[in-house]
Image (cartoon, rainbow, N blue to C red; front, side, top):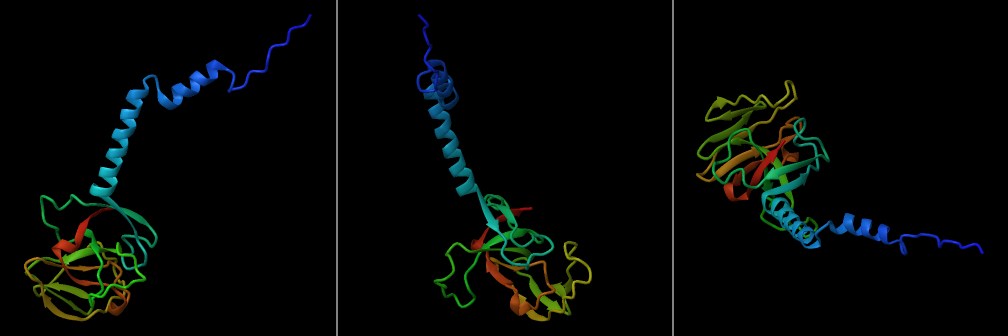
Length: 191
């Protein structure tokens, strides 16, 4: 009499089940569960409280940040120091008239560069930035970008910063720039 062995499938093969259990749960399921919980809490803390990702939508920060590029912003960069001139920062956006556009999501942020610090006077004359009457050296600006901006001088308050994008070949009226208070600066971009 010929005896046939049953076909082994993962459902009826105990060694297959133990291998699968070992891969999914590890040798110690309780320790694996603790590791999963720790990783989940760590991810929430890092990616919700410490870092924010921002997708650039537009060309106002060219050549530093390309359109549709994604950048991480450190929320803790300014806990122990103040923002500095030249820093690329994320700013909570609110329209100039203070109105809330119901079509825009409430979490829109701008990625801009700080050029003016509290207490300084900022002006644009023939495309050059003047800080307290002195021409600002901007090594991040490409030469001959065609900037011809002229903006009247503005003096910043004790808690205000002047921000602008790097692509100044655009007319100033199509560019979001100007004075923002310190509490609107979310953090420093990690470029």
